[in-house]
Picture (tube, rainbow, N blue to C red):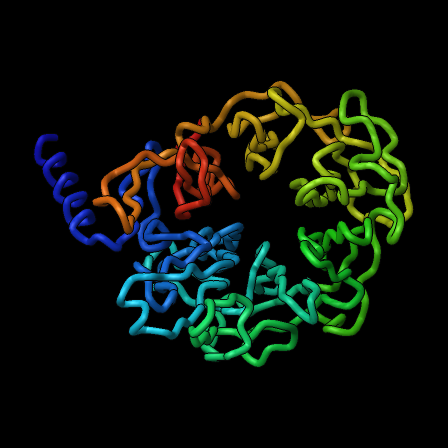
Length: 437
């Protein structure tokens, strides 16, 4: 034990000696997955410590979602990339006036070999990612700026395809400031040359000045996209026939018409009729349609943080369905729904406590009786953040689960984002495997 402490202190000292290095030193529970993340993940580039703002292969800048293949070996990660490049008064910055942003990546990581991740595409921001086992493809939701509006599209990739190429484009989404020459790994806009995948869904998705269609899930042979600006869910074939020009088929809600409020039905028990329309999130912040499916293939929709609706296995638009009461305990607000592989219980992250709670029940009766499976404190860690003003030193960081999936009945793989306990931007992102009972 004494020897282990010496080794740990030596590792900390090594990190502190490198004044411009960010690093996640350890986590409070579970096993930290080595080789991906934990070496700086802020979406702001501070040029005094990273002159060119380029991302290292193993960095995760703004990681937001992940998917596993059926073997559990191959991990696919969606990142949003940088959204801001700071000015810099350091003398080094004046002598280096070029930035290259390659941060917005869709990644493939082999959990077994833990070799260098493969960049499947540089053309994000990537918002969600799913694995389509039937076609051995990775399906990802992409946002991009186009003529002052933000657009969304769904892109499919060969799960083991060739890595993407860096375009070295001068048409970049993030402006580095006056006097700085900027290049980026992928040009902003649609139909970019080095996307490295096939667009399988775009037409009909509403453009928006802030947040275009923001959620996605797979159901049967379709990818379903939640278009909160058009108040409905549309389906595109996973085999890709819709391409860029064929509109998706509405499968939930009434396109173009909302119920006029954030939610449209009671969130409590018993289940009630939900109505034919979905909620309007225009008076809130980042309100979307949460989409997930049950182990037996039923579509569940969490409407703007309010009621959850059961759309069954073959959902139809402009049709009334029943609600599924979901009670996480502390509040009715939840994210990250996933089902336990053996018991069928529903695991959600309750937003106020930030705890993972396991709910028992069924789609017909609803899910209740929360039992804490993951405490928020279990996701904390120790971090070293480089500083322009102070000597770097270990600090405590709080973790928030952005996504998770059971890898077995007793193992949970979690994408954790880390921030200061008192509040801050996310400093970093990493994967942690937890033992759960």
